[in-house]
Amino acid sequence: MIERFVVVPASYVFLLRPGTGDGDEVLLQLRQNTGYMDAHWAAAAAGHVERGETAYDAAAREAREEIGVDVDDLSFVTSMQRTRHAELVDERIDFFFTCRAWTGEPRIVEPAKCAGMDWFPLDALPERVVPHERFVLDRLGTGVESYTTFGF
Image (tube, rainbow, N blue to C red; front, top):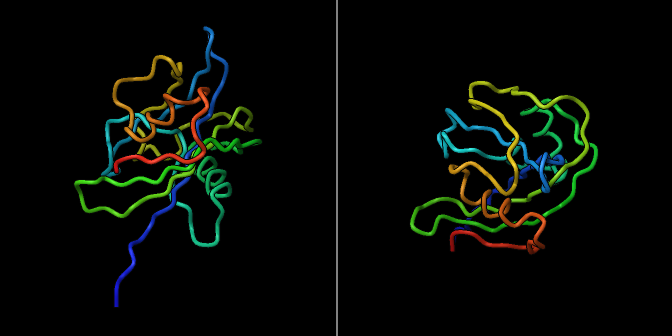
């Protein structure tokens, strides 16, 4: 019997607010103790989609669990099929959302996994951002395709 490969789904939420200049700012967290891209900035809320859960539901749940906010309105940005071509990892399907309205004040809820949280202008992101997330962030507001690939 041929074994099928496994695709791992995840949802990402980029909280956006008007910046002090012309563009928007995005809330990012500094990863630590996760075993993946530690010491890199990443979406403030992200995680795997659980069995029986939609990508939208996962995004809302992750926002509550990781930054303590209830998202009022999620806007779908793109889905990304990705892999790390040279390494043996599961293939991934990621769903990216933005949110401009939420209830609660974003805060670090999981300090063991998050070394910091800050707002950054979209046109002045920190140097170390998780690469596939930066791919999406660099294209926000420029008409990013509804389906993208990364790592092939």
